Image (cartoon, rainbow, N blue to C red; front, side):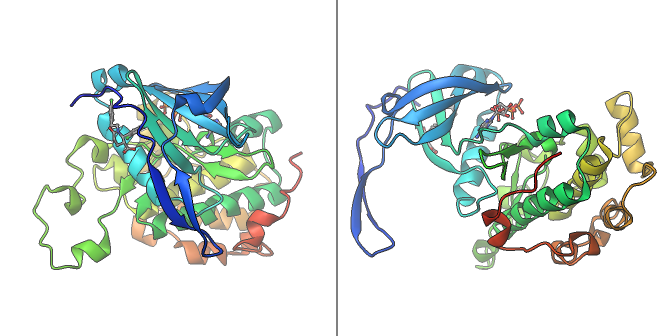
Length: 324
Ligand SMILES: Nc1ncnc2c1ncn2[C@@H]1O[C@H](COP(=O)(O)OP(=O)(O)OP(=O)(O)O)[C@@H](O)[C@H]1O
Ligand SMILES: O=C(O)[C@@H]1CCC(=O)N(CCc2ccc(Cl)cc2)[C@H]1c1ccccc1Cl
């Protein structure tokens, strides 16, 4: 296919805004519409830059991917999965939002929410560990976002403090959806559509993007046993994150990945002295080998550890507790 830009199509789109007014928006943005600033970070196939929209002075993070590199490394599938998942996760404050995509001859561009306070991992490393109040708050925000993802049929599959970014108000923004799994749309498959074995909608882990295994310390036993990722795989990772926020290290960590995997499969981990009892009980109900026996999200929200947490919009309106 001819990748060359066919000229930034200046398409206008009619939209009805919240007052019922018809708004005509010039939807197709291009590189020229932004002033690019500092480099926020580098990925294996990407560079993320801060940028300002020249029309409305809004600040964004723009993720730039080199097409040749993506094609050479056979990562085109991940690019399309990242775009498809972000396009389905547009209505939650705890998930990095995708505003526009555009491309030029050399690169692809994703215009995203700017999370200007870096990664949760960085803050955790600086403090060593979080107190109960901060773990409750950040744990609650992450869980609220995972609940939304799952309600939209998305499994993240690589949840970890590195992928939980922080915005200027220190609220969380989950990122890195290139390795997510999009569950078949129940409505679509409900249409009597018979599932052809090996077809994309049979959820089989036969193709590359589906056979993905996450980051060693957070990968769930079922993924190591070569069975399908499921929503409960994200809850295993969530259990590892709660443990890590309070203990200052993940529950399963060994000298190399193979030894880490052995610890996970044999559930070999322990709690440091002084680990809060309510948190311990919650983690013990999440780090369970059988995915079906892990505490479901609604039960996690009602767990004693989250007593006093105001779920819903309140969680995103109030200032986070001071990290100390
Ligand atoms: N929306 C954002 N706002 C601020 N910083 C971001 C944003 N998205 C990514 N970053 C930072 O940019 C860096 C690169 O992120 P990116 O998602 O491109 O690659 P990655 O997922 O970190 O690496 P890899 O592709 O190897 O997994 C990361 O350090 C991340 O913290
Ligand atoms: O889905 C979209 O938003 C468009 C649709 C049209 C299009 O051509 N692209 C780029 C597809 C693509 C993916 C990978 C490479 Cl290496 C090259 C092109 C898509 C695209 C453009 C910019 C950034 C990301 C993507 Cl997926």
